[in-house]
Image (cartoon, rainbow, N blue to C red; front, side, top):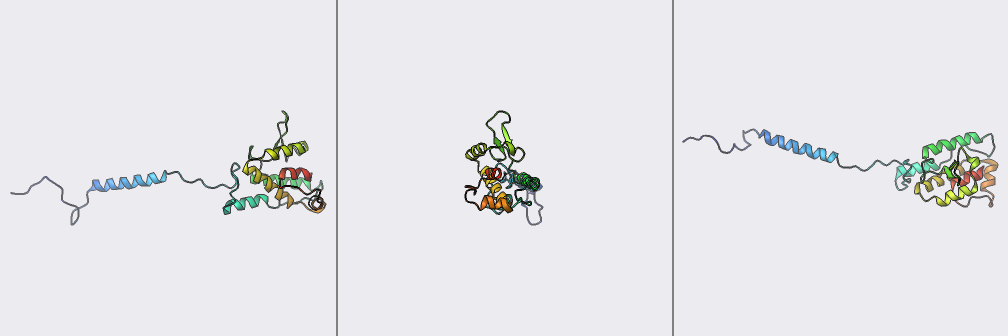
Length: 191
C-alpha cells in the first residue's frame, strides 16, 4: 500500500511553500481595494476666490481672503484729479484679485443701463455713464451672497483709502455719510 498520489495538497505551513495562486488572488484583491479607494469622489479644494461662491467666513482661508478684499488699497486718494488715475488703477487691481468683475449675478462692476446700447456700463471704465438710478437698481436687485460681499468689500476698501478733504467731506459730514455699506454707490459718491 502505498500512498500515492492524488487527493488534497499538503497544508501550507511547516516546510510547505504557500500556494502561489492564493498569493496572487490576495494581491489582486488588495490592489482592487486600493484602486477603488482612489476613485472615490473627494471633497473639492476650497478656493476663496471662486467668484461664484461667497467667501466662507467660517474658515481661516475664506476669512483672510475677504479681509484682503476689503483692506485699504495700496494707493490712497484725496479727491484731486491728479491722484485719481493711480487710485483707479489700485481699485482695478483689487477688483481683479477679488473677482469683483465676475459674470452676473456674482459680480458688481457691470451695471444695467436700462437701454439696449450699451446694455451695461462698467463701473471702473465707464463711470461717467453710471447714474444714481442705475446704482439703486443694481443694489436692490443684488441678492447673490458673493455679490453682496463684493459690494461690502469695495465699500470698506474705498472708505479706508480716501484721505484729506474728500474723507472729511464724505465721512465727517452727517448729510454725506453713506447710509449702507454699498461699494458701487459709494464709488459714484466719491466722484
